[in-house]
Figure (tube, rainbow, N blue to C red):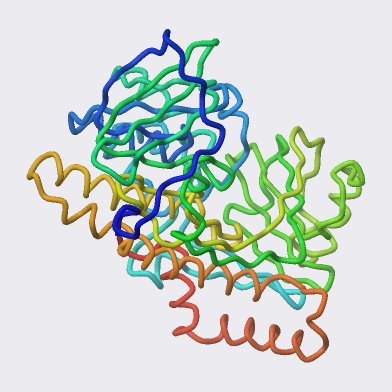
Amino acid sequence: MSIAAAGLRPHVVGQGTHREDTVFMRTQVAIIGAGPAGLLLGQLLTNAGIDNVVLELRSADYVLSRVRAGVLEEGMAGMLDEAGAGRRMRAEGLPHDGFDLAFDGGHHRIDLHGLSGGKRVMVYGQTEVTHDLMEKRRDTGGLSVYEAVNVQPHDFDGPNPYVTYDKHGTSHRIDCDFVAGCDGFHGVSRRSVPDSAITAYERVYPFGWLGILAEIPPVSHELIYANHPRGFALCSMRSMTRSRYYVQCPLDDRVEDWSDDRFWDEIRRRLPADVAERMVTGPSFEKSIAPLRSFVAEPMRFGRLFLAGDAAHIVPPTGAKGLNLAASDVRYLFDGLREYYADGSSAGIDDYSRRALARVWKAERFSWWMTNTLHRFPDQGAFGQKIQEAELNYLVSSRAASTSLAENYVGLPY
């Protein structure tokens, strides 16, 4: 339902200054945010002959410096191919057919490929995805404006939306048919919607993930998810020479409190003895602590403004769903926009929010379940710990339970 139908008007956050030297332009779709969601949507639109402009607050170098997810569902990988940006992923990415669950001193392989009817995931870093999409956009002449400040969508409750921004002291205005808000959890797009028109659902978890990157070979050729009395741990990788490891830590921990030696000692304590023994250690070149939350904003359409990716929802990283959910949003939104411009039908964009949210909530459930199953909670108590142990034992001893895990992990259909 449009904001106008609800009798509401968008409020303005950080509106740019309008001067006589304002630069005007026109496009069909204005995209706010040059992360993977915005760039993927922009490239698909460009390939389909639909004009679009991507606006990004940060510099291109800053966007590429962000360390994020690295497990792609088949649907996400296929969309990179469709965008024409999948060549390097296919050459350098690591297809994974399973992962290990480690608990009670042992580890148990979940056969994703066998349990899901032949599907697998691709380990390929989000930074690499962003880099490939940037290159493809540059090669195909797509317009991306980096370091665009005071970006603000306007009048998206009516037929003539526009977006303003400032760059190098000059005010710009982009008139458009639609605005796609792909600017993340803290972006302006969702904040431009009146509070009365949007409902937020949120759970903040009482711990974070301390993650490091190191130029060392991974301890296993597949991911290892570990549940341990000292807390959760994850052994992942970006390549066969670059490892990405995590340990659960209190929210009030500081990165400065964690030397590399302390990290390596801690993660080895949380892994089965045979895994810890073969782990190669080395200096980290990136270290950070990320809080965990589950968040959904409903609906995901407000007149001619559409939210996609982290602008609309956040999942804890346990289930590897954040980037992949952004891709499914882009799938639904692109299909709707293509139908609108090719056939003059608004059926796809009218159904965007419902279709996207149906898949979002399934992924939220799975990510919440993975987080609750694998982490130790401060208020868990002895009973809660026994229930968690029973859940893990059932999971690895029941083909039906393992199949459910595999089906969700490789990605539900779009």
